[in-house]
Image 1 (cartoon, rainbow, N blue to C red):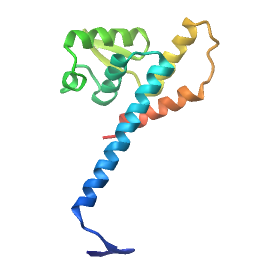
Image 2: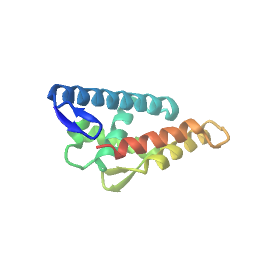
Image 3: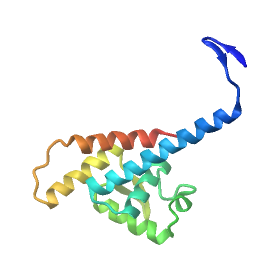
Image 4: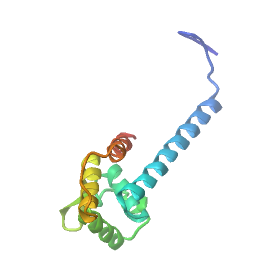
Length: 142
């Protein structure tokens, strides 16, 4: 054991592994929670959710590893991305190359479209705003 500022420091590598496993579990729970909220609040399906979250992390549908990350064929990715574009969450930057909008903008944009489709007065929604912040944090995590 080493002496740290506040006493001894345990250098047991198994505890580091437990910390990494615990941190990974917390991250996976957050992703699951975000997916559930996206589907519930923004009325997008599971495939759309997966593509949107992959775009949040990998930036473009043509990014290295995007297809592997989503386990979808290129034609499926294009079709789903076009649906997300119609829902106001992504943009086509080149032919069949898509990019997600800023998380908060994408979420509010989709919510606004849902309100219009359902003839509901668009107004501030703290749940939707919170989801935007969660997505922004998700995007910034490594």
